[in-house]
Image 1 (cartoon, rainbow, N blue to C red):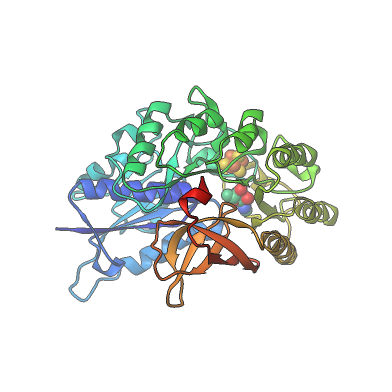
Image 2: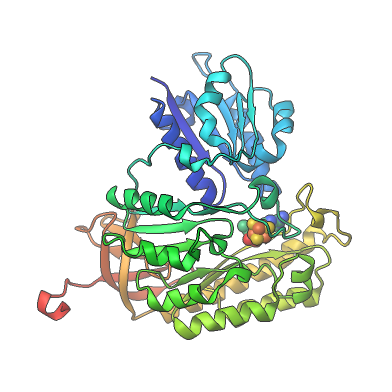
Length: 438
Ligand code: 5AD
Ligand code: SF4
């Protein structure tokens, strides 16, 4: 019996794909391994979004190809977006890799592993046949599960590799998504996060708001989230869904990348600072407590001190509950990599540090404002202290409770007592008597 390990390096889509490759390998008769040392097959599911993420592949391969005490080494699979973008280069730089497979072809992994017994197998096709239809049913999940509804991107932001590695925007058929969601719920999921590179561009006949409304009809599904959204696709019906569908959590990850409309134009974002702020204002009008999260890039080519000041000011103006920020990383083949006025690394470092310090203060302010609220949290993992558990609030805060009787996967009612920049502390509220709850 051979054992496999899938290591995920990237975004939620990458995590979902890793899980699905695990499903495929399990369906082909393999068992999960505890660690790379005991695995016969190691899948490295790579990310190409920034240079640092891509470099991790080669250091991992270096480690895996060292013979073990018994002289063996695992079959090495390079999957994901680096495999898609740089398949030939991987084959040259790391000849020990047995299989190279891109994110749109991994349903063929069992066959590729067979082929690799004779010679290295490479598959970086973007096949027309639907990958999802060829995947086996999902195995039992935790209480919170991802569901890919849309893949690829047609927007071509000038810094981004995604349109090249994940291909054109495609949405999965509604019926397939309802079936997969029902299977996840039957297997114990109470929360589903709909994912896609441009999840709010989901069309599938009814749009993302329609899909959310349909999934909200599944009785045992308690919470719905979605990520990542694009500001251009924040449709009115999606905003209205935040008012009308109680199961849709009050949280929106809406990357803006920069607060400067001039830089947004150079990024080909096709939205402005003002149009972005207008979408958030419309959302807050219907759902005032919504937590806003975002992504930022500092040091995009040509970014001046004034442009960066605009980024700082939009962070203050929005009051992000949470945000991810990155130094611009030139990616091969993207338009921005060839632009003049690349920003020196030291200046990127300084801007990143200043931005992250500011985001920490807005996140702290958001969390502080939730002190005293009562809400449900979905318990996800044990804390470090005895009896401590960590769950997620509706606003996606990590909430720490002490509750020796509660179990992972439970939804428990709590009151928020205290707040830090990255988490809150809460107390469990006693169950309401039936009559009081009615
Ligand atoms: N350099 C730095 N950050 C990038 N991102 C995407 N491409 C790059 C790049 N070339 C960031 C964006 C995006 C997030 C997933 O990664 O902020 O929203
Ligand atoms: Fe990349 Fe822009 Fe598409 Fe997002 S919208 S995946 S940043 S090209």
